[in-house]
Length: 77
Image (cartoon, rainbow, N blue to C red; front, side):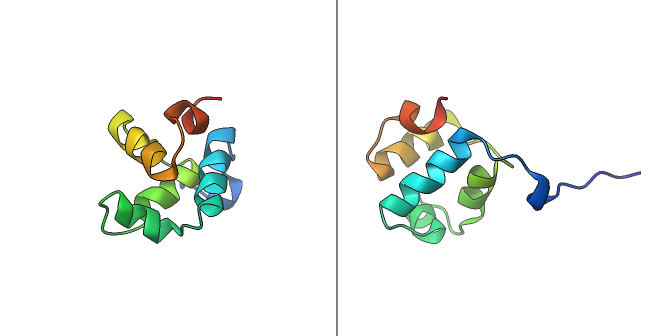
């Protein structure tokens, strides 16, 4: 028996929701934020926002800088 991740059943945490809210407030698409961070595609941003992946400390710091907030404003409950 194999287990699959199902997007529709993934739990949204305050961190995931906050990241998405801040990105939208800044008028950025996932793709634009990804490009600012030096990523080729928006896949990582999508995974951070859906809770499928957590950014490294360095990436979290770069995301916070790009959004003009402190790391703890996004990634700490």
